[in-house]
View 1 (cartoon, rainbow, N blue to C red):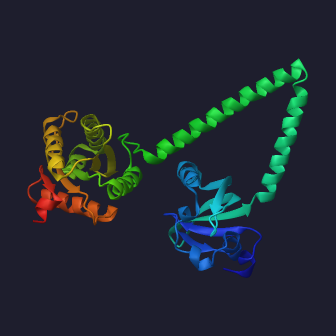
View 2: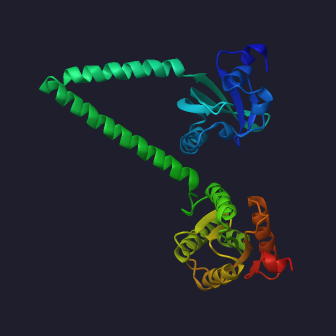
View 3: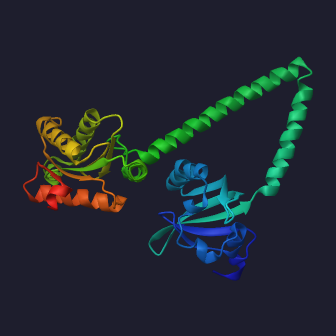
Length: 326
């Protein structure tokens, strides 16, 4: 990094597509009271409050994926002393050497916030003066109504962006990102209260032959019909998501191995017996139940290995990771 960028009067950092800080200038490190090496390799969300993390998920990531850039986002970065530093952020998505990066600059907003507080104070005084006349009251009422409309429009846009970011567009189920966040949440609940859960990976048997024989529109129809079946058969507390391709995943809170396997068998038999339009399919299922030493990666790996065993054993069957490893 050249000296001019390193000492520029604004913070600079570059993120990988996964949100990992790849580079940062000295100004940013000084702003957050960290050594530069303390920033590199960390996820940007390590320096955000819970509220700002939510804002990043519902606005920043979807917006920069859709439009390639984000301008003038107001949020706070968390310094080493755990105090929040209000900043204005601009970001742009760029390709370098075949990889995607998000380059960002941030400018501290403390002085501006003080000015805004003064402006708000003055505005309040003006409003009190205007309230002396009926005409002013009418104008204020109209302004308030316009504000409420714009606020609702903003909430609607944010809700739409959040839904788009967490929903599979073909099937309408939750997507892989939502599943992974839910898996981490269920693991945290397990470690906190020992609440068990089981994980299913459901894979359509011979799905490639459906696409090759009947075409991708029929394949998409089968995926959509299966998604409808899984949603209809699941409980409200269950997580049902499309993992990718012809694979679907389910998280069943409260289900240990003895409870999970019969449920998986019910799904398997229901899939086999239910027409998907003019077609019928079967599915293989791999099941894993959380254990004290598990991480999100290990429990997912065990379910995947159990699925592989179901496939290798003739398909259209259920295998639990415990039984497979005996």
